[in-house]
Image 1 (cartoon, rainbow, N blue to C red):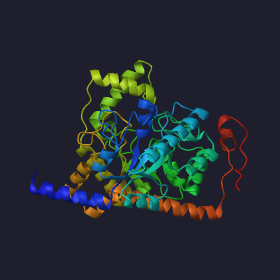
Image 2 (image 1 turned 30 degrees about the vertical axis):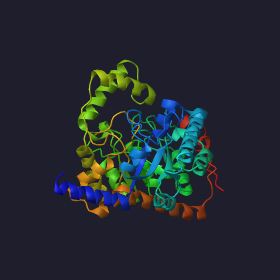
Image 3 (image 1 turned 45 degrees about the vertical axis):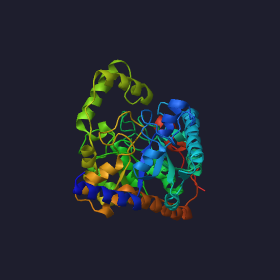
Image 4 (image 1 turned 90 degrees about the vertical axis):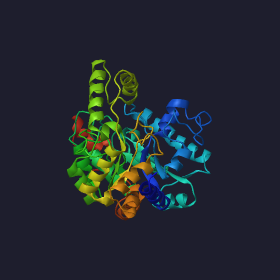
Length: 412
């Protein structure tokens, strides 16, 4: 190691001691369900699970991760009560994970709790629900997820929900329906972050137009750098800055590398010829594994991710960028970021490009902690003026399905 590289490594280690990574999205709970039915005797993440998952406790520590949003994802092909009950099973899995490994993990519901857990030497564990199908068109279900500790809801996953358009489905609403607007308002009121990853650009704009507190992208990159629907257009990044939110840049190869994105488009076209939709998470994941064996993918790199981080910084500002790796949500990650030990390598690349220690600290956790605090403060203020929404999907969106015009939404 050269003296310059040694100096950078020392700098990054100091940044991570003072500002550990708070990552926006990790799918270990779904992998634990898929691989072992949540049996942590069979998948003991207190030791090295390399080759099975991107994530375990020793590697999180080596990666400088001090806090993690665990995704309580369920595929968007699940609907209604099945989606809700499966989401609850995912929530239970995170609670069981934290309880089992309580010497290493601590549950957190707020920025103050995140900092307290990190100060104790443990990794703070938050939850995010990935897709509006998880609430079953029920604001009461939304509120109960918040009571259970879920601190963000991604408005859609790969498919539209009845009240919001997804980035990877045919647009139906042009953004949000009236009920979708009410979902955003109620999330703002209770202090659940509105997550705009996975939604269409029109849904992004519609949500930011009505948002009363900061929003997030938990795992999205910059569309100007890699032109795929899952990434964020520049005009939305500008709106996000005005909202005081944060875009947590993801590492997913086909979201950060144009060559990988083209490979994914070719795979999706091949899958469609076999009747498999690329939006069908479970079916397409199986197809993609077979496709990859016969058609090796290009390699994404740390430098690809650097380009996205720096573009978000350039357009939205350094106060509006974070990290959301999406580990265990995809099978492969970029070279140098293959698992959760990769964050120091990304920070080193940014440090060598002139990032200050203070700005690296904003990126790793400072910005998202600010958003958590601002959203909680905004929720307290909103609760002084309005109580829980009693609006229903049928009342607000019935007219969209040919029903009579809905009555005014009822509020306490």
